[in-house]
Amino acid sequence: RDPSADAQRALMHLKVVRQMLHDCVEQTMSYSDMVAEAQIQSGKLIARALDYMNEMYANPIDLAEIARHCACSKSHLQHLFQQVRGRTIWETLSDIRMAKARLLLQETDLPIYTLAAMVGFNDANYFSSAFSRTHRVSPRQFRKQRKQDSANLKGDFTWLIR
Image (cartoon, rainbow, N blue to C red; front, side, top):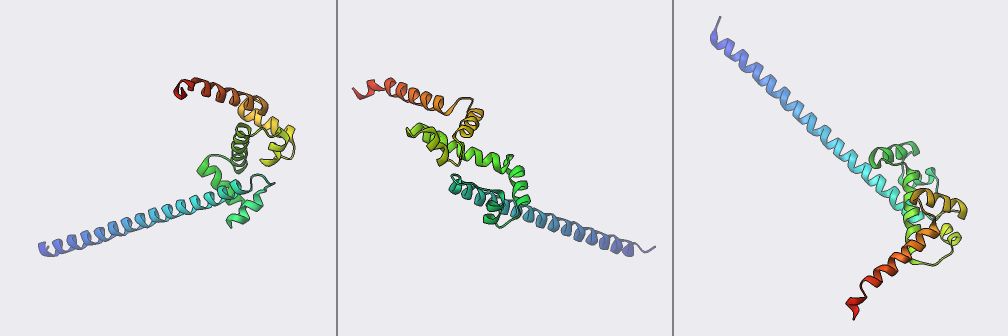
């Protein structure tokens, strides 16, 4: 056997292995780029849906309407919310409505039925029930507690004004 021919064959094999490794690295990087791009697109889609829900929370909203606004299917949107946010679209919409309700309860003296309608609930009793389930206190009690907390806070710092 010719030692130089064996060395050439070994060198050829090393070049092939090197090319295969290079191809694998490129494919992995390409896959990583595709995953990153998909995550960016998913984030944009969820952001679009959240913006829409924050804008339209006071109105009756259905899944088809949100999906249409986001230019995607209902099932894709539901899947993304569950996968990325760990919450359903309806839980998220409820969170938005409850946050708006808390703010209105703290900052206004609007009647509960008016406030309920302002945050997307047609039935004030259902709103009160949903609010109580979420916050373990009724809207009236929540408002009363926040006013007391606010009064106590003001009272605690009167010495600063003197």
